[in-house]
Picture 1 (cartoon, rainbow, N blue to C red):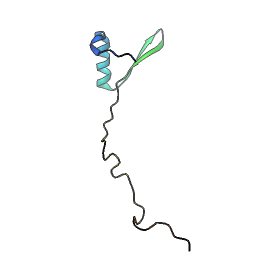
Picture 2 (picture 1 turned 90 degrees about the vertical axis):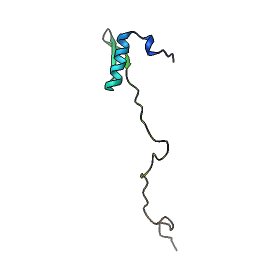
Picture 3 (picture 1 turned 120 degrees about the vertical axis):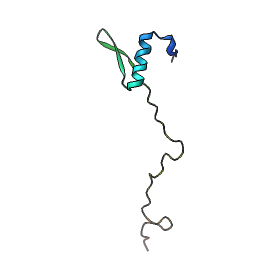
Length: 72
């Protein structure tokens, strides 16, 4: 995929990108009634590398003894 800097785009496109980034809403570019491109901000979900699953586990019995009845 080819990449260019924001400064290389015309000022109107730069303004659209900045507005999309501020509002979080994408823009659809239309030519002859057909959508040809979408300007959309990238959602960066910040998630902790360690501890992401903290407090999500559940202990349902004794962790030393088995929770099932042994068949004798």
